[in-house]
Length: 381
Image 1 (tube, rainbow, N blue to C red):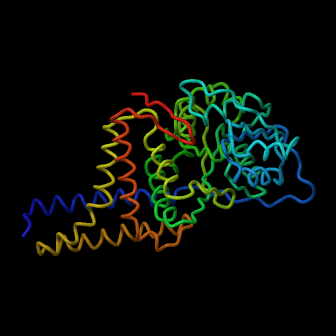
Image 2 (cartoon, helix red, strand yellow):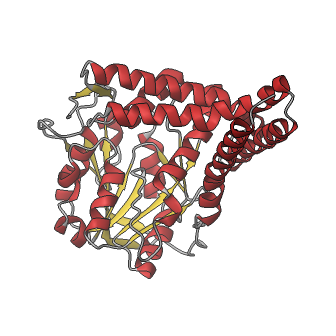
């Protein structure tokens, strides 16, 4: 038999785990949804006050469709600027083929202390004139009413920074097994649904589709102010929040979609870049590692433990935890577009993230740089 105090301790921990798991459901429920507005009849009007900036590096596969979607919008941006970061795969030809509607800028050499994405965005922003600037990734597919819908929402809400969560395209086994768990981590860690509250201190943005008011962007220093941040979108949102500016964020799977990673290796490198950053803290990473194990794997051991020691209370709570954990992950997998059955593989997702964090800890201990798209970024203590 298990000692009474041990049983009580385990039950309290089980309740804490359930509360934490419930946060993801709560934040998902609170997240506002932005759907496409009805398309306008007749020729699409131009909106000269809007500039679109795309920082691209070796995006020949995805960029053509992204540009064609933008050119087919029912509210045509005044200018579309692609900042080419030294591509070697034919990306420049893709852009030039759409000239003069799309303008290409060759990115100057990356200055020391800058992350490539921020440097490309900053270079593009300084070359545009619009009152609004829409930063987009080169692999984002958009509904023909996406630009107008988000722009009009930002204007109605008097927001200085507006962003949306796009639908994540998942085609391979590993994408479907891993990325739904990633969505949950973003929801809980960044408390995304709280961004829209008037007095909230939460800051969140998605660099895949990020709209800013130029006046606020320039006054706060733009991407130059977050030049060393790997998660430049979140850092920019924090900059706006700390500057007293208004933020808006919504879930909009019908407005935009993107395939974040192609294959297990690219996904591992991308997630490692995200969790590692350029400012490394072994304490933070070890804490994250312990949290993953303690909140998602150890609770599954309560049922077999209760069975082994003959504790009905522990077995009952173990069953509750199994149903809650697997049920939640099945629901999230289905909600973000993966087959529901992939939610049953959530322990595999957790193990994958443990491997990512272990790699981060190993790299941080030896002060090795972060690599992404052929560029290395030194770690700043």
